[in-house]
Amino acid sequence: MLIFTLAAAMTVAMLIATALGLHQEAQRVKLENRVQKDRYPFRR
Image (tube, rainbow, N blue to C red):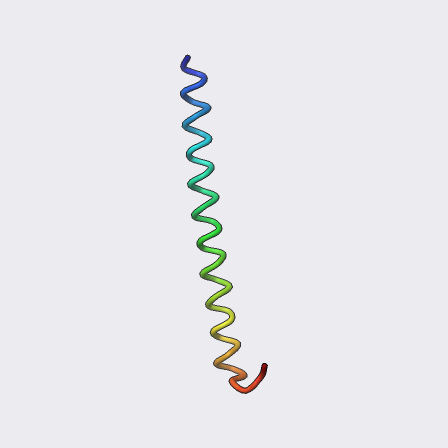
């Protein structure tokens, strides 16, 4: 029974870590796009 509890806890921890990683990556891409628009405001 303990092994199943540990497995469930690790699964939840990995899901949270994945969500946080995706969120950070999205923020970084958004920031890079903003910097590019500031640098080249008239480029399409």
